[in-house]
Length: 443
Ligand SMILES: *Cc1c(COP(=O)(O)O)cnc(C)c1O
Image (cartoon, rainbow, N blue to C red; front, side, top):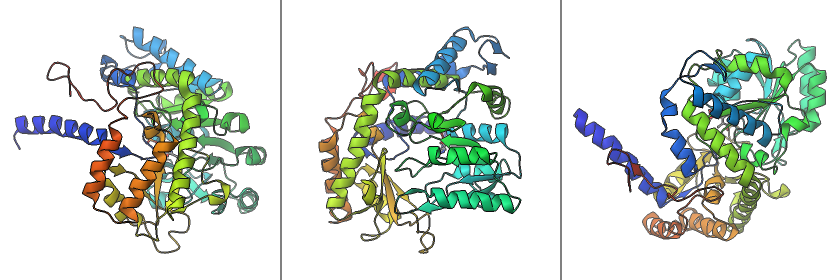
């Protein structure tokens, strides 16, 4: 491919992607759609600058405006998460976790975390699985005992395990809460005192649920006893891709070093500006949004259960978060169903469920799918639309209807939901493509 052809091809593929998302139903639980203001931040000149260090103590000149934005960002993060200290420089959720590992543990230490089928994230994982904690920081990982019935960590069994580990000379240094398949709060307040008494540092990974915590509609980890909370800024929190850490003043110096110079050089200043805008939006609209997200997740779960899907967590009302987990083994496997739904314009992801590994299922063809409603909620959808979405899913998965036909109906359903809601401004469409090379034309 010639240089000119490659250049045009990339620009054209991006436009096609926008068109595709504009007529699809985005249900990836870790994704959201940012406001036009956040998109404006992302294309600003901030993204071309360096500002190593802390505002006011930079290694580079040229940070007059950048410093002010970063201070606003930190102030908003402290306010939104009711925290003494915030550092908004992590370039992703994984980098935020790495900064915490670096600040509060040493290679060879033990950490308690959830396994992947129990909802844990690769960044909490063992070296054998190429997980970040093991592979990059040399931590040893022990998994929490997990209750599939309750879909959360088993408190009594965890206490027993920590005591056993201490007796074996493997006393854990760190407890990691939070996860990626995350339906119900983790028992932070039930375990924090016990863990602290055993000399453990507690981090809560709120990557998925940060927007719900911001809205005061999920557990409040810092108030429940966690020492810090790491998060992604782009999942239920609707910012640009990035990370944030909030904690107590007494941990500030260690965390700051863990971020810089520990794990960043450039900290992606355009994203810091975007995070500040997203946090301001969260302060204004976050509660109302979080309430609607949870309502929508429950409505979708109920509608799918009504069509015979095995929605997990039934005993506890399916979910208290933005996502649901669906056992699809009755209709096929998670991998194939993910592909079929994609053809129909319904975008979600396959998911390993508790028990899958034991049953011989694996990551490519697991027993489940995970469905998240943060993005469709931001587009203004309510419980009624969740019933429509459940029906589209049923037509593909249960009725095996022609995906082309369903795709057409999905596109027409989406026509009414073109703008980002819960934002100060939404003049530009949610997926509208602004072409800078053609002088700022909207497509
Ligand atoms: C998504 C996720 C992360 C990683 O965040 P990135 O911003 O993608 O680096 C970390 N922890 C959990 C629990 C996650 O779900």
